[in-house]
Length: 127
Image (cartoon, rainbow, N blue to C red):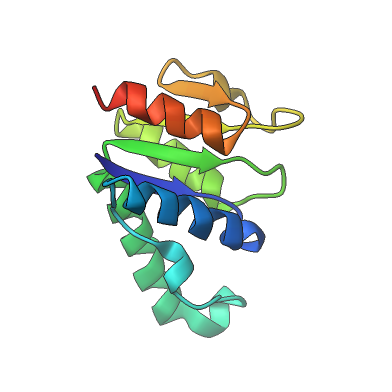
């Protein structure tokens, strides 16, 4: 299955770990945003930021399922969540704590509380 994994930049190690597990299980990650360098401040890295934004949205577009590792102070992850919903993609949202957006209750979103639950949900979706 083609999967895009979204998360907070500061949590990129957790994202990398999940991407590694997905790859080991035979899934195709459509774009690994953790492989590009940190681009802040974006205005000082406008060209690279433009390219990264295009690659990340293409990763969402090309995915069958988007996994979002929700963080209340995330920014880009909510853009990717919105793009996934607008494109009619199924989303598995890993949520712990308070809900930072009502869109986690959209019918295309399956809420889980851990990475293991997300992997199990993905396996059910894969059938």
